[in-house]
Length: 531
Image 1 (tube, rainbow, N blue to C red):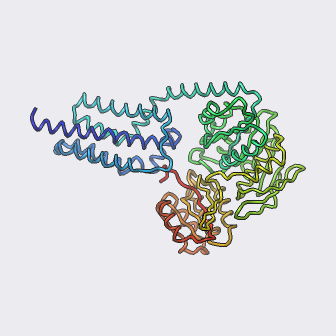
Image 2 (spheres, rainbow, N blue to C red; image 1 turned 45 degrees about the vertical axis):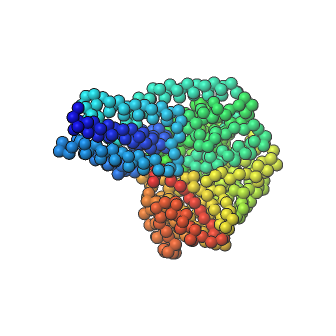
Image 3 (cartoon, helix red, strand yellow; image 1 turned 90 degrees about the vertical axis):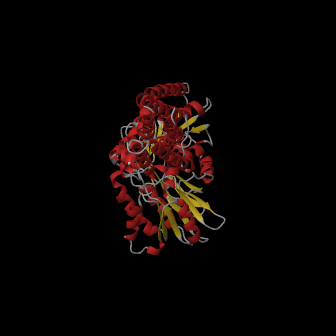
């Protein structure tokens, strides 16, 4: 074997050797984003095109390496090591990257990673067999450039496998539920507020019943299936099921599994419009829960939202309508609402009943969520004194308009889980009520609002100008819309408008601005898919 041939082989094998960790790390990141998009190809593809992921600098360099090795006048012994250097560089970059919501290697994720890696290896091996070492290196770096396509091919291969596994688990969960005919099942859905309401209801009902709720954000069919299989016990008396949706039919699918006897619909608003397209589709999907109830069922729905108040319920199960903003036509409302830095006093007013409550929760949205939870608890005959005790000792749900006090004298309003037009308005209302210091907001704005993204974030900026003294706008995604909205209000001091690239930078700036007695509102924290 000549020296030239030896160098040729070494160069090619070097490029292939460093391709192995590069393809693993690249697919791992792609899989993380696919997981954050609920393993839905259409959502993942839309995200990739809208965020420029398909033409990112990393993929451009991989494309460069691919073509570099194809150019006949460039010796392979030069182009292959250059490709290897590119692979090393970006592998190290991905190794050092930190994400807010890293990949969770669930069994499904492991299956998808394994099949996708196998597809990439098979492509390279076949190309080597058909065209030789140089062709194999070109194919290897082409798979890096097209890793998203490789991942989606792996997803397609696994479709029948995943369907079979999911059906098996669903059948098992359905069997468990059928074996518990006395179990009370309460479904909760809404564009927002459902997770907080779920926590409040669980806390109150646990004063009388052995109660289980779907944990975390287990609000899909598979999340409910997992909850039933892993957490539901024979002695459980009440099962509270949070039901999320990204498209029509999602709520019905969960209801067909659990068959709820009671329901809470917290909101119908402009959320996930990228997939729902219209607010009417949101309304129909949320009311899939109401439509699934038996004739002797019980529904509690929030009339503060026009798309709920206008929906007829006369021919359905017993329905209680509640509201905080406008009690007209409602059965339940809250009066005498008084906020302070440590919580809220309010009076629950229902049919022939008035109950005074004190709670550590703040904000109209939290009072609204409590109204729904209290109404269901009264329906299930939980004693009033036990309800009052639970409400007074209610723990705030993390990142959902909960209030904290720092040793340095700052009041922190944490509403960072997500944001939406109505929720942000309520959060700003709480901020506006804070006295004694500067009112500061840190926010990247709102997402998944479809064609109204810019308009609604501009309106958000206008509300910020009326409610806050200092605004720190994070990131690029909604920057122009929010700042234009703030600047449209002449009363807001331009010197108090700050634009930063990251939350880390926002925190450094806050240290220089905040003083004891100030209040800081964190409104939303965009996931990695919107960086």
